[in-house]
Image 1 (cartoon, rainbow, N blue to C red):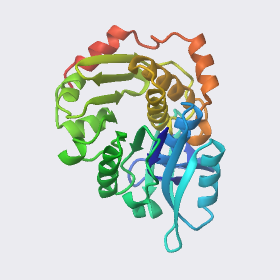
Image 2 (image 1 turned 90 degrees about the vertical axis):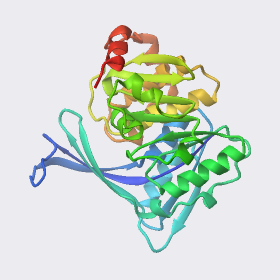
Image 3 (image 1 turned 180 degrees about the vertical axis):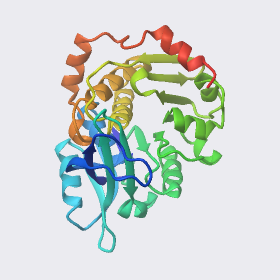
Length: 311
């Protein structure tokens, strides 16, 4: 079982020809709302695409925004441990998605800033605690301490990017970051492989967008190339990857196959709008993998050279 401690936001999504530059106004096509938030997205992906029994501890306002957030999680089979507050709004995010599927996101944390380690449910029966950085850093540190004491593995998606204290790094069993987050944490300007080597975590996974992902587990590197799809909206793809990866590892899958399954789920996520609404079921991921080559769009040796090249 996987327990996710993290954020839940209602996403207000505007589609536009392009993302506006600072000080610029761009006319959008339309506005839609979708359940989101890194924590909630990853919990949905863990349960739906990863197929793992999943719980989530989260904080919400007692407002209209909370209802679709809870409904989306529950429809995916996530068991909720929700803290609700009268004096603060649920988290929201404002997202501009360009016609070429890129996005720019601004988050108003709201109740997410009230989440505490004391809100964690009893940890017996869980294998992983998965967290992100859209909740207070102090909550992440104390939750990691409690999880380690209870025998859980601690997984952290260090997003949004920020420097992490050594006491937290020492408690993280599996760190998941993108290239920018890796640079922030490692303070390394060398290659991706060099930067991974200086991060003091047992296992680190670096997502590379359409290129795929690379993992270092102990002294061994594992590469997973990306899958070519017709992207509609990349929102939630990274969260889908994180949730599915942890679910696969919790089920006992080896790292190379877990990376492949997570990469396929993330690729499929990009073919639909929204975050949680675009997370595919596990059956769709299996069908996709049965039809596609695991080495597209870039050959593994090209990916390896990319990861070993100096930035």
